[in-house]
Amino acid sequence: MIGDLLPPEVAWAERFADDVPEALYPSEQQVIAEAVPKRRREFATGRWCARRALHRLGVPLAAILPGDGGAPTWPSGIAGAITHCAGYRAAAVTHLSAYASIGLDAEPDEPLPAGVLDAISLPEERDQLSRPGPAWDRLLFSAKESIYKAWYPLAHRWLDFTEARVELRDDRTFSAKLLVEGPVSGFEGTWLAGTGLLLTAVTVPARS
Ligand SMILES: CC(C)(COP(=O)(O)OP(=O)(O)OC[C@H]1O[C@@H](n2cnc3c(N)ncnc32)[C@H](O)[C@@H]1OP(=O)(O)O)[C@@H](O)C(=O)NCCC(=O)NCCS
Image (cartoon, rainbow, N blue to C red; front, side, top):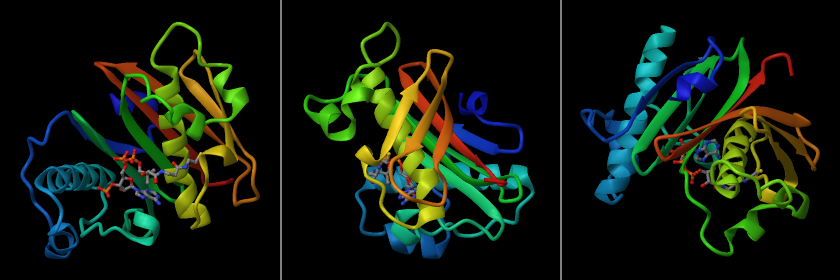
């Protein structure tokens, strides 16, 4: 599924269950040792996807430890992102010479719990959510999560949900304008709804 959202220079892998071996490097095992089994499994399947994608890119495999702000520490010269939600795990990677950063997010195609939308959106963003289609409020949330994952490795700091204004389009694209100073002024993304899931992806071209 996620491949439909990504340009050809981006390698990716996805799973719809934790049906792959829990093969972690000792240093990865150490950081996840105290986690509950469900979290260990999603972490391991996320790493499995990441290594499969790196292999497709021809990059030697190594431990992918959580780094600054929780962002995965990718091999030198690589940008990437990992996501997991119920029934889905995925990773995407690319050479920094092609893209400066990537964001990826998966969510169930279901409305946000009551009260969440107001916390994660601007009033003008809410105006675009009452039309036929997927759970637009959850899609907005997912787009913002993808934006954050692409933002963080570039900016190395928090970005609040109200610091980017997102426009979701019917043609399965979206744009975001940053409302704070930063290394980029906005993001372009793509989205997809299917099999009960919403997927969003953001790629930041290397030249920006
Ligand atoms: C970090 C965050 C984006 C993760 O999203 P999520 O929907 O909760 O969870 P997902 O499963 O999709 O993604 C988790 C993965 O994101 C990655 N991640 C975590 N922190 C990250 C960061 N600072 N930068 C980039 N990637 C990060 C990790 O790979 C993590 O998986 P792992 O711990 O197994 O390696 C989210 O928890 C968060 O803190 N959001 C608040 C900030 C935000 O979204 N602002 C909106 C700006 S418009």
